[in-house]
Length: 273
Ligand SMILES: C[S@@+](CC[C@H](N)C(=O)[O-])C[C@H]1O[C@@H](n2cnc3c(N)ncnc32)[C@H](O)[C@@H]1O
Image (cartoon, rainbow, N blue to C red; front, side, top):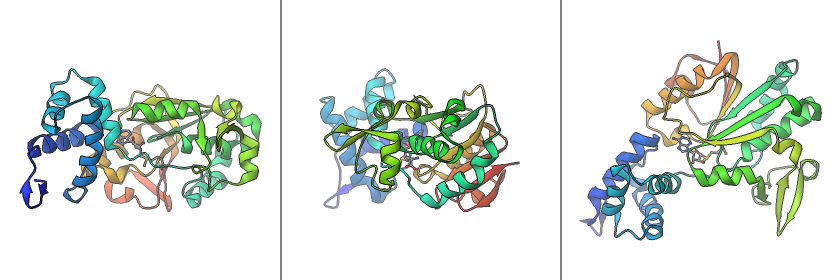
């Protein structure tokens, strides 16, 4: 139970029911020590929809007829922080060891499974252009998915602030992006054309893909999930990856303890047998 000044909040029942709903529906877990963060995030939703408090908000999302409010709660509860060229050590392995193995393929299919605003997907497109040459973009398709509708919309626009680009080489930025005014840059069309963005809840397994991917990026998301959801997600990603294909995670994620089907290759990189 969340407490204010040692007393229970008036809307503790609503808070707990939203917290449980986030776990069940999205796999997102908020431990007690993050209660204030979740409360601040939910306060924005109650304000936007002119709801009295978290009890009323909980009522709206659990009834099942307010998809707009449900989407707003999912968006508010998720941490969308991301940026270009995040965790370069795993990206180097992807570019130097994995991409050359895909060079001869007619189609290169890559999934950015918690894509947020698309920074990761466009970073992947840039690495393909750099490593395999711009012609390889014609056979590249990158799918970026996220549970949050506003970040999917933002990813489609492909416009980023220089803050999101601070880890990126300036020469690379001028090769693949065009200034869009006020410190913003847009990804150039040949790269944009390789990326498609959709809403997808990673908890809704199995995933609805007609074709398997050769590489799946699933970074900086699993640690928001309960362990059983982490394991189920890793298993479903395994099924969505072609035999011999790769999973790229963030260096902090303990895939091996959660799903032993994945064969460890090196830090943050796993292979489907
Ligand atoms: C911290 S961002 C990670 C972005 C990128 N992969 C990276 O490493 O920079 C995590 C993203 O996961 C999304 N997310 C949270 N729960 C999700 C779920 N159940 N299904 C799909 N995406 C989810 C959030 O909306 C957020 O955009």
